[in-house]
Image (cartoon, rainbow, N blue to C red; front, top):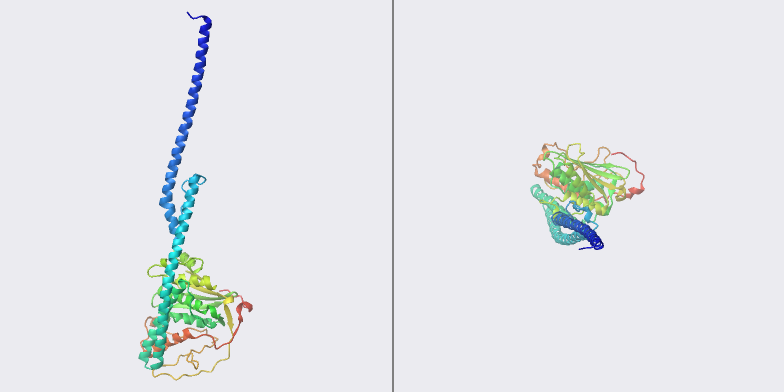
Length: 430
């Protein structure tokens, strides 16, 4: 039989054991709770990372590849921003950057190779076009029959368009425009551009300003104006006119082209504005089929030669207005010389002398007419009659010949003053 002291000791020991057991139970419960929290957190992290990997592989990397390839797309951000500060998030961002850089490098190499190939092909076509022009010019010198001249001049005009197409491709691929001229009056520059397009008879030119474009920028401006004119003519109906006029401002000259065509949507205007700004890189593999080279080559020329091109839907005829702005730094002032007596060149049988007269070497004689402002050398006809090519061989030969001569004419007969940037000019509103 237990004594009282022994019973007390047993009860005390039991109490201690009970307390220890309770402490162990509480601690185990705490440990279990913490572990469960860690497991749930780990499971959540795994789920977040799985979702982030799906977003990375399914959305972010493909978008980065497209962006590096030149597409106008936005790369999605990480789906779970809280992962950015983790090692996993840092590795994901590094992978996006690495893939983009790799794709951009591959794209650049591919683009350079494509440009080299196209530039070589364009140079070959330009060479053949130049040879054909020499051959046609030789034939023109040998024949006086209006019907033969008509055919030769049509071939010459088609050949000039072929040369322009090849020239555009070469410029898009980084080549120099390829023609060195002397400084040319703005009216000659515009007429030269008109002569290079198919629908030249539909162009109404009102340009009569005493300014000339500096020699190194004549061909780039001619090419840009020609592309904008061709785009305007192709985007409007056959029976409508494309009107060209120039305005002199304080900072330079604006050549304004208005058409009555189908116009452009706001998205198309925005895209065109990016292309002609010169800040948009041109990928010749993304010009479409058929290739849309007009605005693209204008942007290349703008970036390289310092003039400006803008496109909007402010044409008063419901179509598109394109403006080529040539700053004073690219202009010289053409001084008005005394009138030169007309020198009549012996006409070929069945042909007529152009209305503006010719110089002894057969080029059109440039004169300052005040007023009225100068217009295109094409005889004035009604819009309805412009829909058809003149039926007379003599009229056709004379008209095409005048355009071809206008393209070749440069402002060498008149003395040129200093740069317009050094001359006081009147600030006029457009």
